[in-house]
Image 1 (cartoon, rainbow, N blue to C red):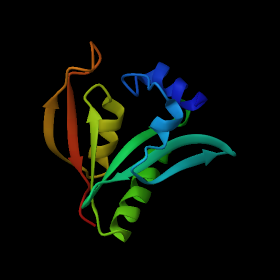
Image 2: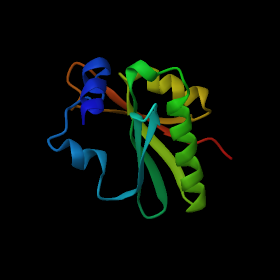
Image 3: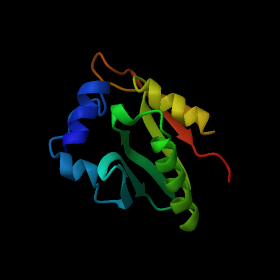
Image 4: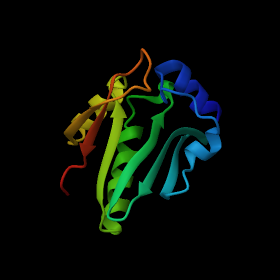
Length: 136
């Protein structure tokens, strides 16, 4: 929870602090959740949730002090492998204020598929951008 709080304060993710951070990190419909460590310290987190026929990347964040080391990309690649093993299409959604994350997704070959206006982002975010994973 400490890392999540640090990420929230440093980058505004998540836009709205969850009422129950532990539950937020491990959603009930999670296909799986992972952390990545550096020097035995948690440096990032990712959850992949499942609907009937698709998987969704959620709760992806990396310690701001560890960015630029490829940790987010490693987590994304792991999510792609997991979705492929389950024969699920993989997508993600990101608030438009998460510019570093959006840049990562584009560098990793993810394709923007939609932009949806939101009313819950306050003065921080005005839309959610949907992406689909690159073809394997």
